[in-house]
Length: 252
Image (cartoon, rainbow, N blue to C red; front, side, top):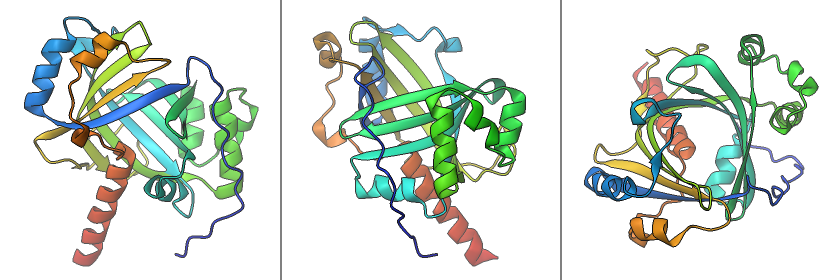
């Protein structure tokens, strides 16, 4: 299908609040992870929300009929948005609809908790209730769907080990076993077929902070510049899903 670009109103840069953050991503090896873990544990605290130090994240990303979110990421568009549903440990107690905005070198994430009824409506492509919700994530999703027909694009699974440092609102995470899958109707399906997107000896290190990155944290992260990556888990998983679907199409 030929992709048609509509006269879209570019997303506005997020307001300069505590949510306006920097995000750095690195591809590292498992030996590098173990070395960094030893350093980080001397000064940073494990995220108290992480049982036994880690949790599983599943995100269902949405895109429009023309794959604009994916295309904008690949093109390096300075201002762009992604929408996703996010759950933890395949459980339904906490379900968030999130809008992640990027404005040049900064990110901003807005979020809204959904109840079971709202989630069921969303997964059945009934987005009407979002227009009545006050949260920006809900209203923006609804507006974008009305204009560009948002629909499920890809499942992204991974295991996260998070650390926090209060000064600068720093969050350092190790994201392992990043996996891609196609949404098949059940967001909580533990048996959903998913496929690894990284080489078995690699994982993703993310560093997020607000106004500044404290020197103590910077000194704990001696990551070479060559390890820095602009590739997002969403992009890696979209590419992997396309590879799998293409292979399955040739075999059928």
